[in-house]
Structure formats: C-alpha cells, structure tokens
Image (cartoon, rainbow, N blue to C red; front, top):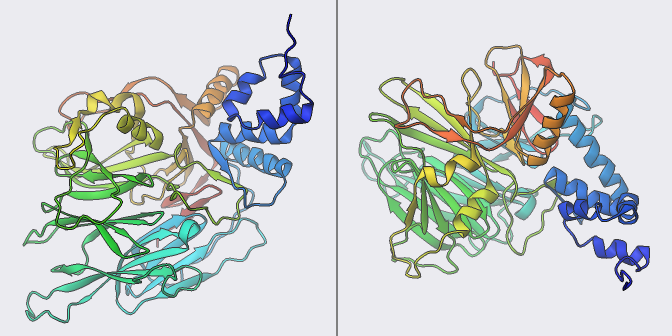
Length: 508
C-alpha cells in the first residue's frame, strides 16, 4: 500500500499547507482522521481561519495582534452578540440641534446640524476608558447629504447647495448642487482628488433627495425629486472621484430612482421605484459622455396591486466592498465580509387600502452577484437589458420581515450578517436578526435541546402577510434566519448597529 505522502509531511509543513484552505474545507479535513483533526485543533492559526469563516468575517492583516488573541477576541464578540450582553454602556448628549442627516460606519457616527452648515461626528469607543466627544466639519454652503469611505479612502463627500450666481428669476431661483471631496483626518480638500469641488448641476429645488455610495475610485450618486410641481428629471451619475471624470450621466423620468448599493467594485444596483425593479449597472472603464447608457440587467420586485405605488426605497449593505487596489485602514483585528453581508431593502408604500406602509426584505450581497453571474448578456451596450421576474429570483434568497410596531425611521440598522430592531412600545427588548447560515444551524440545534424564551429561528418558506392587499399575488420568501432578544428592556426610539456595538437613540 503506497504511503500517504501528505500525512508523512512534517507537522509544520502540513499546517502551513492547510492554512491555504478556507474554513469550511478545514472543517471537512478534520473528518479525515484523528491525526489531522488534532493538527488543526492544536493550531491557533487554523482555528482562527475556521472561526473567521464561521462568523463570515475577514482578517485584518495590518493589525499586529497575535493570532491567538484575535481568535479569543472573535469568540468573545460572537458570544456577546448571541447573548446580547454589552461589555460596557456609555451615553452622550447631542448638544446641537440635529437635522435629518445621519450615518454610522466603521465606528464613526455622523449627525447633521439643523442649520445645514455643520456635520458633527462621534468616534465611538471600543473600551470603557475611552472618552466621548463631538467633533464637526463646517461648510460654507448648505449641506444636502454626504457619502462616506473613511476606512478605505479617508474620504467624506459632502453635497452642498447654494444659489446659482446665474439665476435671474427671483420667484423661481436655481441652485448649484456641488460635490465637495474632503479628507476625514484633516477636513481639508482630499489630496488624491484632482478636483475637490465638482459641479453636479443647476437645479430648481434646494434639497433634492440624494442617494450616494463610494467604493474604490468610484462615487455613485442619484438625485430624485418627490414634491416638485415642475417634475424635473432624475439623474444617475458615476464619477471617478480621484480624476473627476464623469463615467455615467443618465437622465430618467421624474421620481424614478431611490437607493444605490455597490455589489462589487465594478457592479452596482440601483432601485427603480417607477418600474418597481432593481437595475444592475456596470462601472465603465472610461467616460462615455453623449452615449445613452442603460442597465445591463433588471430584476423585478413583487407585483403590486392596482392603486399601490412605491414612494421611496431605502437600502443598506454594510460594509461596502472595496476597490481592487484598496486596503481598509482599520485598527480592528477582523471585520465583516462585504461579499457575505446582507443588504436590507426598506420599501415605503402608499395604496388605496393603507395611507402609508413599510415593507422590509433582506438578501445576501453574494446572492445578487450570483444571480447576475448566472445570466449571459448581449455584447452590444445599447441592447435592451434582460428582465427577470420576482418569482424567478426572489423567493429562495430573500426574507421579508414583519416591521409592524417597530421603528423604521432609520436605515443604519445592518452590519455584516445582522440587523437590529426595537418595538415602538417602550420599554422593549432589542432584537437582533442574524442571517449567518452557520449561526442559524447552531440556534436550531440549541433550541432543540434547551428552552430559551429569547432565542428563535425560522428556516421554512413563508408567505408575506397581505391583509392590506399591497401585493397583486402571494409573495413567498425562504432565506433562513435566527433572532435573539435582549433580557433587558430599553426605552430607545431607534437602534443602530455596526461590527462592534449597538447605538441606542433617544429623541426628545
């Protein structure tokens, strides 16, 4: 019988060889025999690879913490999320009058000021000994919105509006909408941006609704109007923010676009509320001004009943992917995988049966990428995009969540595989929804063995409630998930989440 050359290798070489496997393959290798299982179990490096894969996280190679310490920290963090037991709690008062502008990314919380001339931010603590203090970025002109790529590019993109110097009609003035590219560290014009101030356009409304996302060298931005009597067209733009080159300038009908998500560095998803669909757009490699640009692929949302319309769509997939030549500038030892992260869609509905209603569904970013990759596309750029109906893509990879009685005001409620919710009836427990399939399997086994009133799971296909006749036909979803409820009850008006923490919001 020939010798097993692989297992005859020295332990150090075999361990190094196994380290090139992903975590789920290492788990399979543990089934080979006791010898291999012990090698893997005795190696902190291999156990860390398995733990990262299990938690849908990625290692931060720029963090110098030892592998064994990273492994212990990851295990502590995952246990804390399951038990919903914080290491510490800190509070800080909002000392300025806030606007409706906010965001939470990579441990930094942003909150606009009511005068629209300042953007306040808070570096959230990782240790109880860290002090909390507000900082701010001041602008000369009124802030309309912002986009963030802090840990990838040290970039804060602030959209401002000011009276157009060429506007001569006092009764119907026009405004210059501008993009200001700043370094988060210095608050000065970003050193990598050849044009730190970019004119978006001249508009007839001071504050259009803005959707903005930044990944790598690309900044995607959509403007839409919801209450303008002249019904100006929507615009979808894509810039190379470093060179200032405009790669896409797409005009659409009034009240068409609402919500942008990057799937990869060169593929993004745009919510079309007029067509009730999600559009896949490829990032072009060079400017194509003057050329009519279209999405390359379209997937439909569930058909709505007659008289029902979408008012707006909010979407979030935190963390974003990064560009091909980028590295995250983070001090964390590990962080959530962007490809495996969930994307949450919050759809605001109006119908004849209910004045306003909010629908929420969740899908993994990787599932949307797979749907796109599994289809072939015409080679001609001007070809009409293929359309995929909801029934052919949605039910197996999505989960609709009942949001009745919960706060739906804020969109910063997802991070990695998790999203957070809290009831409007306070005090109430905080609820964490977890879409990590490994955690769903663990919770399923746990619930079979123990009685725990705060841990649940659902891995069956379910029909979305349609008592208000929003949908034209039954809608089903089957993405497995589990959820945990905190033992303690809280009086928060809303709860945000990132990789490390929850942020409870009280509005006075």
